[in-house]
Amino acid sequence: MRPAVFLDRDGTVNVDTGYVGRARDVILIPGAAKAIARLNAAGIPVVIVTNQSGIGRGLLKPDDYALVRDRVAELVREQSGARVDATYECPHDPRVGECACRKPGTALFVRAALDLDLALDRSWYVGDRWRDVAPAVDLGGFGVLVPSAGTPDDDVRRARDQARVADTLNEAVDAVLASLAPVR
Figure 1 (cartoon, rainbow, N blue to C red):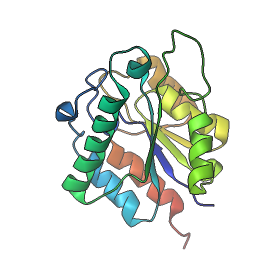
Figure 2 (figure 1 turned 135 degrees about the vertical axis):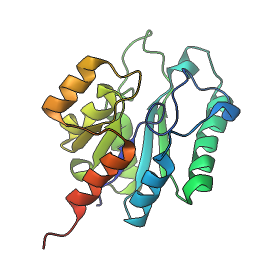
Figure 3 (figure 1 turned 90 degrees about the vertical axis):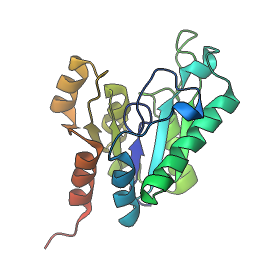
């Protein structure tokens, strides 16, 4: 089993415009595609795990979500030749009740580990909210918060106490690659 890097999507890989529902509105965060390419070059699987309550709320259709998901992957490929190995989404409306797949829940990470033969306790969990990083605590991995404009101050404080904070996705990838480098 191998470690992976689990990335949040909106606010970490692409600009979070609030319920991104149209492929033409997808804009990657500068440097995100190159950071993913660095992980690819190191042979580390890149898996996006994203909460998409807009589907459950009726704000976007599953087909629209799929077009946005595909556009993110396409832009990553176009900008750096990189790839996202898999994407898992929670479509549920949190107002209806809790579900195991909505982050900080771990069900999607466990599913990805089974599907892709991943070691959750050696993996990295990266996002712009504490809920993206919290699965690292529950699953024994490593968390990195990459704050965006929408990141609450409490999330940053919590990440400083229980995980790491990086200014950019590229800086988070620096930490991942340093941790996996052979000791000399």
